[in-house]
Length: 243
Ligand code: F6R
Image (cartoon, rainbow, N blue to C red; front, side):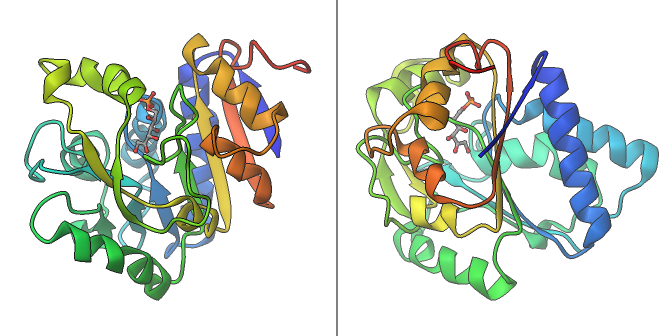
């Protein structure tokens, strides 16, 4: 596992944004796995600025998002489809039909079962972007996580309601379930980059980098993958023994 420690969230966006731009330049048909939440915002901002300045061509890129809340329509302001449109897709020349976000409405159970197949048919994810929860979740795979899981319906836990309440009017409005790519789905990506900033993530990062592999810290499953880079700020790195 490669660990890159940078100054702050903007520097994370710069470092990781460059990796994504280079990947598009090297392979215009690259397939990305994408995340939502606060962590990737600076990366998406970098990609938008790069598009405006350098016109990097996203027209043949495909993306698969990690997760979606159950019960939120794609147009709901807190849905992850809406987030992706607002924070990235509406501002670059990606074709919307090439962007996949799990469905949280309609027949979401069968659609979730088809999601890994859809990724495989597209050719598999070349580069997967991940955040990490304060409790070590990746995607919405909460502890104790099943390391063999594929995309499916998952229950969220109290720590996640609390962490995500900031996006909703009240903690009671945070959906209790989501559709998420499983740990196995995530580990199928050819390359993974995980980002984290702030002290709140320091414990999860300590487990990820220096801890034992345990389903109580789902992020430690990444130790089983041959090509993982983590890009974090000093605060998220603050509990690491070696910096
Ligand atoms: C989001 C996702 C989650 C988040 C994690 C961190 O698609 O899968 O695992 O990456 O909850 O969220 P933030 O970045 O908001 O701290």
